[in-house]
Length: 489
Image (cartoon, rainbow, N blue to C red; front, side):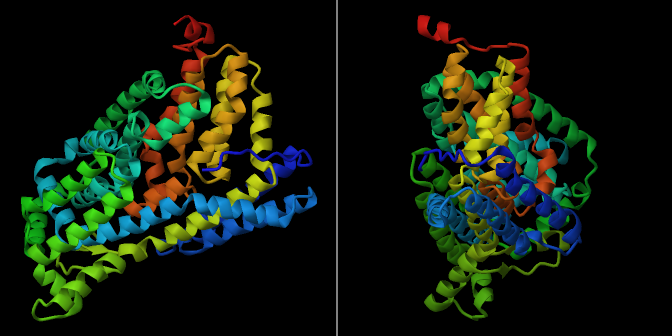
């Protein structure tokens, strides 16, 4: 991606902040007051339009500070271009979720999961499972799109609040994403700070492991203290699943192959496409009645099989069940379900692109840098900059790249080893992106898991605690590596 930082000396700090305050203010009203009813959906279009309004306010600031309109449009185009991969992955995740439901893969995961995962251990087990898968794949997105969706289904069947389950999925997924050498952000952060990958991972584990242990303890306590109603109804749920689907361990071949492909460093898009196509074939083999039911065909023909699988890939499919608990779990939206999320990402990129073009992002980061009079102040300024960019630029990569380039010299001037910066970039820039509803990561996880950002945010303990842990280490000078030590070694 393009990592240049655009500066605009004409733009004052208060002018750079006007679009930010306008965006946050209108979004807060929209979500908390205007669209706060049980049937309201702020992601149906209103939030997207507000992001465009925020971009409009930023464009006005750019006009008054002599930034050409074509320059703003060019930066918006560059931003949207940088999200092409994410948008394609989102579409493939929708396709994969549809075929995995119709083929019986997700129902089978739920079926066996209900027998293995009791309510008392479900939340910590979810955290650990997602952590292992994310470390192996290097992708929080892939983890959520595969085992994450199944765990949401199991948690819902057991009677857990879905926000809790999603919080455990996301906490585990981002723990693995941070520490995996195959993760893009884990490679990007040391590249921006000026250190190497494995030095970065080793140094980052000093703050990441304690944060993870605290997160695990919190989920153990939560799992033991929350009363759920699903345990007593497990037999009914299991019977309902086997009534609607042909449940068999053979269906697990598909997720095993997908995870294996990603571990072998296959491109995620290719792995997801393979998983979608294999699940479509398995649907025809193992669930012919469901495939026929989608199209209303009495007998399986090539045409009915093709149409049934294609509908599961692209649009909403509902597998009939008399169990109300499973009704939502047996419904998939295919690619179509991801369109509001894609719409949100595109509008967020408009806002972020204009903010970058007018120099607002660099102005905000520079102002935070000026507050760094001490070592703790420098760490705090980095954390604040990453948070600000996740909110304003709506993209975790920019939240790593911009502070990384802006703060690298400051860390060196204070005699701090570059891994201090790379660790702080990941402890904040990577993990907090998923806590912002209009950030690409927040929008993706909400769309994939079917749980709104504000619902899972209070339970994404790992993501919330990580920035505080890095600040605690800085405040008490715990394991803060000096540049002179790096030179001697």
